[in-house]
Each structure stands twice: as C-alpha cells, then as structure tokens.
Amino acid sequence: MSTYMANPQTVQRDWYVLDAAGKTLGQVAVEAAVLLRGKHKVTFTPHVDCGDHVVIINAAKVVLTGKKLDQKMYYRHTGYIGHLKKVKYSTLMKTKPAFIVEKAVKGMLPANTIGRAAFNRLHVYAGEEHKHQAQKPVAREF
Image (cartoon, rainbow, N blue to C red; front, side, top):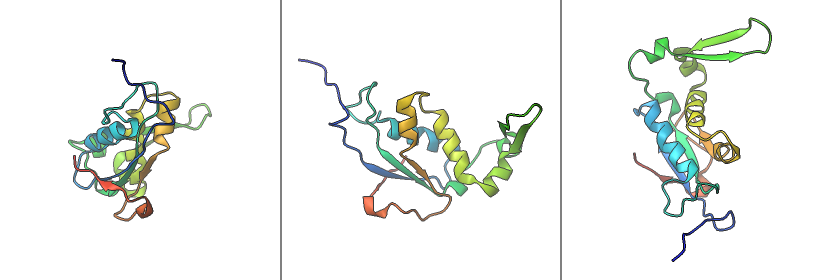
C-alpha cells in the first residue's frame, strides 16, 4: 500500500464561515489557520496547498484577554530613520478590527508560497454581513 499524495489538480476547496463574536483572538486565528492550511482534511499533504476558503464575520466583537487591549501595540516602520509608528490595539479595534484578525492569522501561516496563497483565501469582515453567499459557505463551530 502506498502513501497518498495530493496534487493541485485533485484539491477540493470548500468555504467555511467562522463567527468571531465572543471568541478570543487566538482561538479564531488558530481555527482559521488550520482551515486555510488544510490540516483538517485526511488528504493533507505538507508540500501541496490543499486548504479551504475561510470567511470570518464579527471581527469587531473578538475578545482580547487580560490587559492586551490597552498594553499590546502594533508596530510598523515607514522606512525613514526614526519613523517607527506604534498604535494600541484598542485604537485598532475601533478603526480597523478586521486588520487585527488578519494579522493574527497571517502570523500562524507558514512564511512561504503556500502560506501566501492560503492568506489570499481569507476574507475578514467587521460586521455580520459578507459578500460570499453565492459560494454557500458552511458555518463552522469551534
């Protein structure tokens, strides 16, 4: 008996909806990363991109435990000397809640071509509504 190896032609991609309301940021990110990578499938092959599409709704209602909302910072650099910008997560939750979830999921994906392709299949929305009804996504509980 030989080991099954998936190839890009045989990959079946499904659509899942994750509701982030009341869940911690880490729980949502882990579940999304597993689905995007395809590790929940019995046909998972490490060197093949066999993940699914993931739609995350209610990103504005995600929970950060402890004092992370006030103490955790997001850093970025403009490229100029001394221009390190930092923003508190409480400010980001008010302005761009979808960005926080995207950043958490991206950090859990591999830093290679498979991870970049998987990240392109992630769709995050701050509210209840999303524009992927035609794909008939399945609600996933976690």
